[in-house]
Length: 272
Ligand code: 2NE
Image (cartoon, rainbow, N blue to C red; front, side, top):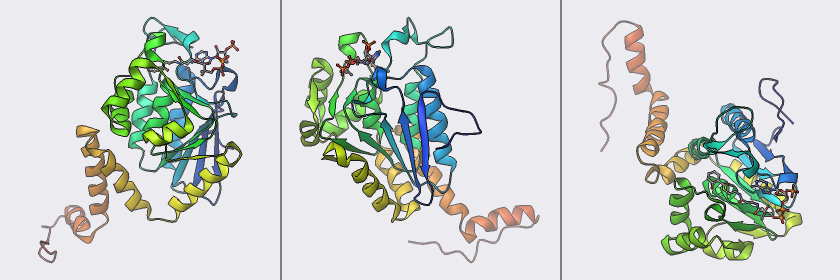
């Protein structure tokens, strides 16, 4: 178990498997079907940030406490007239920032889903890189039933995952889909018996951990680049810069500046 900078979490559990390179972030509000309030999202963002910064971590499991729900979206009892409000006087929709954070995090995030992944909780699993579902998982959007919608990633990523007709069906009708249907639709990567969920998820994590972290990093940004527009390009461009900084050619520019001399790039090839 861990926290960041010694600050305790109330709404989530944050763990790291030392030596495995795996972090696990769990929404811990099972009595509310792991719905999130602003505080939950703030804590999730802290934990994801810590996992990003920790260079011993290569993959992150995102899940909900218990077997009844991954996440049931925004906690409706905290919904005010301008968003979700808990300790502040004003409402927030900070889960949208969390979605962006997961998309931009240069390590795979695996949603481990038991029970309901609905509403904003459904969007959270969709923004993860991979979803492993238990056979009791149920997927769906509820926004139009409860006076809400996610017209950002909630719409566009769904369209990508299951296609435009199915995405309309899912959003307009607010039906719930069982795990096997979700698998057929392309919403999830695999479905396993509930009792095997964690074991299977860890197996996938270990398989990923065997592969090149830089290759995975660049592939994640490449796979997101078109859909994320300028910010997607920025992410993959940043990866390019990161790689370039590690070359002699990149270092020659920096060194020449620091040594107050003209840079000599003549020895570097102009590749085809
Ligand atoms: C998830 C679902 C289908 C589960 O049903 P069930 O029968 O297993 O449990 P139950 O009895 O409904 O829930 C247990 C307790 O959790 C609370 C319930 O009110 C109940 O409380 P008590 O009666 O025990 O006091 N609970 C569950 N989900 C909650 C929620 N989201 N907010 C507040 N309390 C919640 C069933 O519970 C369900 O349909 N839940 C609501 C799902 C929903 O509509 N979520 C919000 C969608 S909008 C959204 O998330 C969103 C967005 O659209 C755009 C941006 C950001 C967020």
